[in-house]
Length: 104
Image (cartoon, rainbow, N blue to C red; front, top):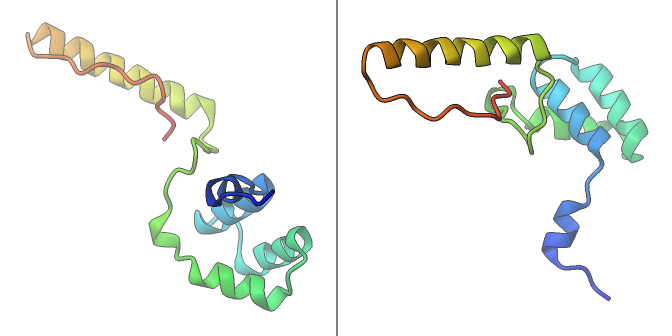
């Protein structure tokens, strides 16, 4: 039975996604990312290099909740949000609902 486009799009290798995100965020250089991607995918290094070069580093977005933000930073952001909410309550202003999914 043929797969639908949606089924094909949900089949991805998390290691390749992580590798591309690491490169785009500047945690890996082009040579290392190219080498690792070639090993993972079986593509020629030239193809991997071209793919990585075409993916610009200025448009990095969170991908399906993926985050390498350390827990201590996430906890700090939640604490800061709670302090801000307390300040707003004291001032008699409306307090936005806190977000349980702060990741970055």
